[in-house]
Amino acid sequence: MEKRVDVKANFSCNNKCIFCVQGNKRYIYDDKDTEEMKEILKEAKENGHEAVVFTGGEITIREDLPKLVSYAKRLGFKKIQMQTNGRRFAYKNYCKTLIKSGANEFGLALHGATAKIHDKLTRAEGSFKQTTAGIKNLTSMGQWVNVNCVITKPGYKSFPELADLLISLGVSQYQFAFIHINRIIKDDPELIEKVVPRKSDVMPYIKKGLEKGIDAGVRVMTEAIPFCFMKGYEEYIAEFGKIPDGTVYDADFNIENYANYRKTKGKEKAEKCKNCKYFAVCEGPWKEYPEIFGWDEFKPVKKSSD
Image (cartoon, rainbow, N blue to C red; front, side, top):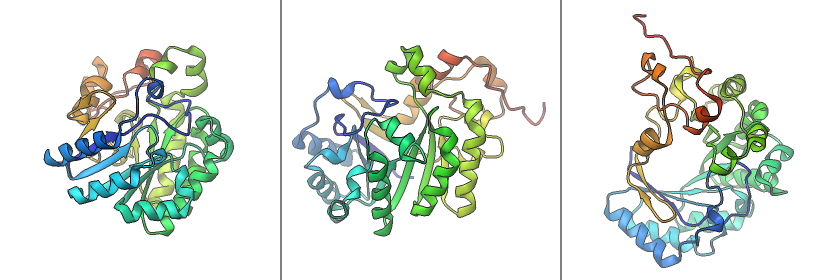
């Protein structure tokens, strides 16, 4: 698996997702300018990275993005991925421009099976229509498209239907990622009640959504759902060897090894998890979840000798 670098180019965005893990960074940090981005890309390539992900915020609102993608291609990056809400890809000419510049992977985001659900979560009217049009445009052009679906209380019951939609649009992969609770949500009990579901409640819908893709031959996975919830679906856990090692260039700091960061700072496991057969490979949930809901839902999977 190639060494990957994620570059957060900006935090400004044309959506205002209620669950955004970046929180209020858009109001704190300026966008990186063109020359700063070029220096980051050059440094990352010199440090042995073979794949780059342009991310944010929303990268497609940058007018210099085609030039930056071309620069990454000239540097020799083999995979150049756009991580985006996908709205601007509703315009075919924009798709063609980025593909011609060198983009060869596209990670888009859709969080419910209907405009009513998705637009409520993104707080951007028309975003569902634009994103689904963007997915259709890219798949019709033969591009590799992965769709990330954040698991929230308003959206999770629609995930089987969302899976049907994504399959019909011809995506290469989709993944269900449990919401990473940001500080704004954590400090607001009303928002927690409104946005964050219980893991045990979502699982029947998540598994049904996974089965749709499995049956259709589409690559599927989950993120931030520990093994004890995934009986029979363990091979679809993204953290189980499916996420490339990599570096993250964030706002004003870098994370040299994001996998290590997730395991040591982002996520945690309970004392009882030591009794689970998957203890060595499971990362546990994002730590904010048990801080709010506790550990009762988490049941260690018995070892074969038990």
